[in-house]
Each structure stands twice: as C-alpha cells, then as structure tokens.
Image (cartoon, rainbow, N blue to C red; front, side, top):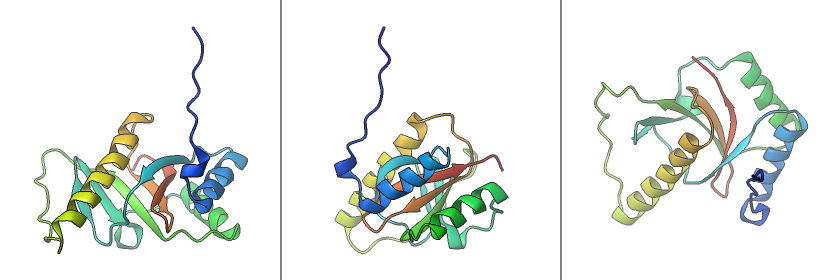
Length: 148
C-alpha cells in the first residue's frame, strides 16, 4: 500500500495564506489551511461550533499561542481578523442570531463557514479552542489549538 500525501493547490491560496503556512512550517508548527469563508463580525453558533472574533472572546490565550501570534506579526503579516473557535456544548440551546439583511449572503456565509467547520472535524482530533487567522481573501489558517 502506498502512502498518500495531501497536496494543497497553492494557486488557490492567497499570498498571505501561503506566507502563514510557510511560517508554520519553518517553526515546526502545524498551521493548516481550513478553507475559505467570510469573517464573522460577531459570535456565530453553527453546527455545534461557536465562532468568536478574537477581540470579543474572553478566554485566556496560552503563552505558546501568543508567541505564534507575535511571530506572525514580527514577519510583517497582518491578517484581516483572528477568530477563536470553540466546540459548543450539546446541552445548551443555540443563541438567537440576528437576521442578516440578505438571504443569499446568509446562505453563502453559512455554507462557507460550514465547509470550514467540516475541515476542522476531518483534520485531526479536535482540541478546543482553535485560533484561526483570516486573510483579506477569506482564507482561514489554523494557527493553534489547545485544551482549555
């Protein structure tokens, strides 16, 4: 049986996403491309996950993760946003979401976020939470995951 290697089509990624993945590889960190999706501007509950813009998240960020963020900034890269993803407890009801202005934007955003979340589940064992850098082109790059 032959080992199969997953090949990411680098042309499909933005320059910033490629640079982020290179920083991870250079430092021996497992940065991963999770796909493309719009940046949430407020917390979103979707398919058992809670996506929170990092500036709105109140959970502590480990020193290791802060070091990775500082390394990204020291390299000159400025992601459009940082998102913290938490696994939502199954016993709690989903929070009420305000209605987006356009149904097509809502369907696109939920579909794109759903595909990113599907990628999370299919990668490795999920550890909660996960920090993601979002590029201006909508690439979601996993920077770190830890047990809280």
